Image (cartoon, rainbow, N blue to C red; front, side, top):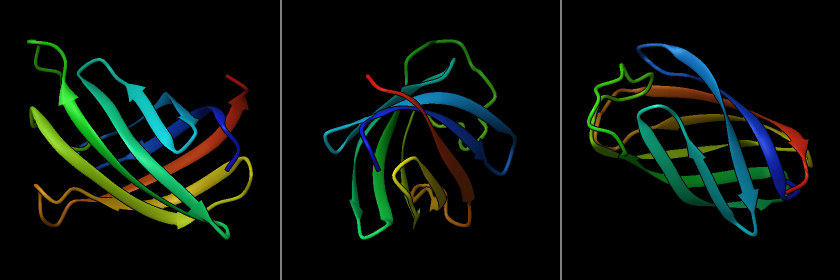
Length: 109
């Protein structure tokens, strides 16, 4: 995938939503009202793999779409093109939770 700003649509066990995510030089960074997401990704031959650490950044309790924990990991994989990816993911700290994530390129950063 090319470096840039992406729109992220995600669906977890409790809700679905969207946010912006920056992919740059193998690093990923995003945020929502309750958590920051920092991690890394590889994209080899049209297959994206990402591992992202989520950390709560506020004392307020927002209902989480994917997990209501102070810290957790998201691991996801799936097919990618230069400007999009369709991923399936999971949270090791919450067995049985399945995630869907779609990334669509927006602009350069």
